[in-house]
Image 1: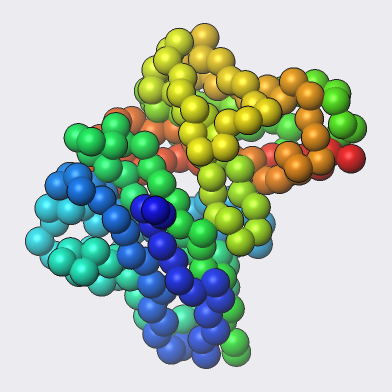
Image 2 (image 1 turned 90 degrees about the vertical axis):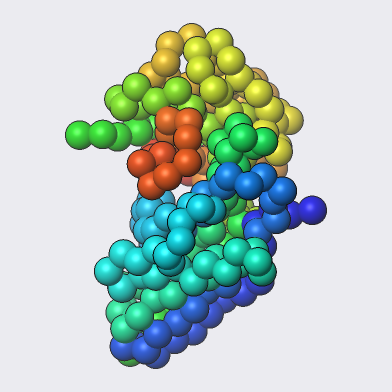
Length: 116
Length: 115
């Protein structure tokens, strides 16, 4: 079974609107961390935001926020006020702690296109 | 500057010709990994290493070899490349642990084409 599931192969959003990229995960480890990365067309992987399993509050980094629903095992990325430069692939990833030796697992990614 | 470097960035080769993609990090990270990225499949882990002389298979290790003789270097070796190994390859490194400080640092990627 996949540990990280991103069900949206592609998403479209109008510039300046908000968009949510879905990510669900599967783990029995009580200690884990969830990451989101952005991959623009140039190819590099850019770290965006992190959420730990014990964090009480949802993580935020500028226009990025993580909607963390632990009971549902979801960690959706919310991008507010989309910009043309947000067009990219977005990957959700998980690192498991005590049981997983911290080796990260990635989802298949979501391609986001921001329309002017 | 903290970074992971990979070389070469682009490589076109022929079936069966051995090649090595180098990876080096300057952050004294224990963990290093190799991934391949293919359309629709995301990043799949090839091999990883938890420290010097400690390596293990990831999800798609067939056709690849690695070695970790020094902490900073983690080369990926394709002994006899085949066209199905045409892909975008990433090297990554991190320290063990959970938290934002333990994010993975990625190299710039190596685009390999095997004809």
